[in-house]
Structure formats: C-alpha cells, structure tokens
Image (cartoon, rainbow, N blue to C red; front, side):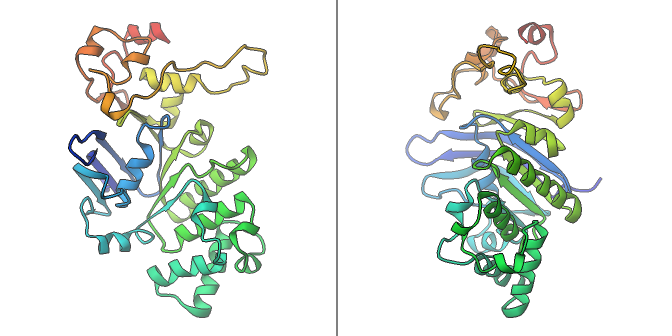
Length: 330
C-alpha cells in the first residue's frame, strides 16, 4: 500500500500559561496524493487551528503542539526547526487563507507577489519568473494573464483575487494544498467556479487538498472523504457519498439537516437547527462534548467519552452510532 502524503496521528494542541486548555485532542487523519479531504464543522470546532498546526503557523507564545505527530512526505515535521518550516511552506505544502484581500499585499502588483514565491522556492528571476507567473495565472483561468500581472489586488474582483492566491500557492509546486474557507466572501456562482478549479487542479497535477469549509454543497461537489470535527475532536470520518447518504454521528446528522433544501421556498417557517453552541475548551462537559446538544444522549454519554471506532467504511466517536437510539432521534 502506498504511504499517504500527509499523516496526522493523535494531534494535541494546548494553550500555554498556568492552566493550559486542550484546544485540539487526539486528531488523526491521512491524506493521499490526488485526494481531497474536507474538514467540516461549526466555527470553534478547531478546523483552521488544525490546518495552521500542519505548517507551524500557531502563535508560539499562546498555543503549542503538545502531542501527536505530523508526517508530510515521510518526514516528521511536528517540531521542525523554523528554517525547515519556511522551506516547507509554499514548497512542499501551501495554504489558501479565507480573505484574499487581507492576505495580498496592497502595494505590490500581482506579478511581484507571485514572482517572490517563484524566486524563493524555484530560484526563478527576471524574464523566466515573469513567464512562469503568467503560466500560473493562466493555469487558474485568469483571462488576459499577462495584463493582470501588473495589476494591484484592489483592482481585481473577489474571485480573481482568490485565483491569484491559488496561483501563489501553486508557485512552489506543492504536493499538499490547505484551503481554509476559500469561498467565504464569494457569491454562489463564483464559489462554484473556485471549487471546480480546485478539483480540476487536483486531477490535473495530483494535488492533495485539505478543504476546510462550512459549505456542504462544495464538500459534496469535490471531496473524496469527509472528517467532521466538533469541539477539538474528529467525531466522524468516511467517504463523502456515505456521509451524506447515511451520517452516523448525531452531530453530522444535525449539520446535514440544517442545510437549506428548498424548505424556505416551500413555505416552511424556519430551517432545522442544532440547539446550543460549541463549548469553550475550558468548559467542555463530562463524557461526550456534544451531549448537551444531542437528542440521543443517555447517562452513558455523560459518564464516558466515546472512543473513535470503526463503523462500516468509516469511523465514528459515538456510543450509540448504528443503534436504534440514534435512528429514533433522527
């Protein structure tokens, strides 16, 4: 069996200080070349934090990795030196952040920003760097690429700016692309175009993509597998088709039930919702963290935190997954 490009094993992230709190607990997943894994969950679940830990982007004075391993391309980079991490970022792995307008430098042209990455990771300068930058803009489907190279970010649309961010990420020819809410500020049509572009890049150049998103239709569009995260833990993983067809964890069921599916157009009074909020890391309930919001919770859920166990072709952290209790609460 071919080794995965990325393997995260038992990752634990804590705040620093006199009373550290676990923000991420026992997070494990793998990602193969040419595969898209979607990491989904509400705000505060720990999705972006997990992604930033993969590239050593955690604020060292406030948050640190205290357990587990991160292996990228066969190399353990969990506690890699800063110099090595700078080589990895944009080289072996790259990240697309949520808001391209705040991430792009407003006083540098698009071409200058792409060529900086080309110089750092590929050693290209001058005409060679400019030619490659144009190729990258064409790769991400930006029309009149040579002209756009000399534009400043504020002169581009939101969709164009996101494509520029993808071009910068691809400049170092990474094997792994971390896409953190890449369609947050975009309308539905442009969001679909960006998702289609990412999927085409995955297929064409063999990228492994870790997609962090709230956008469940986007997940269904391009993800091969899904990992559902709640309060710092992954509570369910499985193939995308299986997750959408038969979610095993009550939280996953709640997320899918909350999707607009024409109910509003049909005159329904409101969408289904999950009551309550994600607990703070320092104030998690005993047992299962989802218990106070779960319609199927029992005394066992309060007494014992469920371990992640195999179920069908996936894995789930729920005492009652696959039982009549969950079916009755659906």
